Structure formats: structure tokens, C-alpha cells
Image (cartoon, rainbow, N blue to C red; front, side):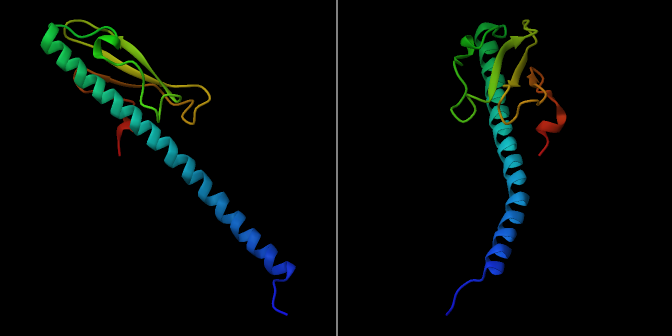
Amino acid sequence: MGGFTLIELMITVAVIAILATIAYPSYQNYLKRAKRSAAQSVLLDLASRQQAYLFDQRTYADTLAKLNFTTAPAEIVNDYDFQAPSSVTSTTFILTVQARAGSINAGDTNMTVNQAGVKTPDAYWKR
């Protein structure tokens, strides 16, 4: 009779459990980086829209609606809140995105980009 003994089955289960405990945190970290990257992409798109708005209106937009932005992309709509441009003058703006409480990125520092292309926090923008 060919079959598995209980010991062999338990060893297999233990190996799978060990692999899962190693792989799951890496997967969670991958998801965090992917969502953060998507939010950064939207921020850069909004900064580009601000430059186009400046070209047309001779000032920066003070609302997201003026930039034709109504909602975040589906993959991050439940994870991030995009805030109205702040420190808006005819020569400056700051765009900010904040991770929502309860999302995988909750607790992250707000990410910003300004008219000069300065992005903060630096650690989130480095690859």
C-alpha cells in the first residue's frame, strides 16, 4: 500500500506554513509599493495639469475640479485622498495625497509635489 504517513503529511504542512509566513509580508510590501506608486503617478499627472492650467490662465488652479480631476483611479480610490492644491499663488502650488485610515498604506506620511517638481517625502519617491 502506497500512501502518506501522518509524519510526512505534517512535515509538508509545516514547510507550506513556513513558506507562507515568509511570502505574505513580501506580498503585503509589494501591494503597499504598488498603491503608493499609483498615487504618485496621479500626483505627477495633476502637477502636469497645473502647468497646463498656468499656461492657459496665468495662475495655478486652486481646486482639483479646475484640473478636471473628480476621483482617483479605481485601484487607489479607497486607499488615498487627494487634497485641493494648497499654497496656491500665481507662481506656486503644493499638491498633496494622504493615505486613508484602514487602507494598506494607512500611517504613511502625506506625499506632496510642488511647482518646482520637489517631491516629499524623499524616501517614498526613490526607487
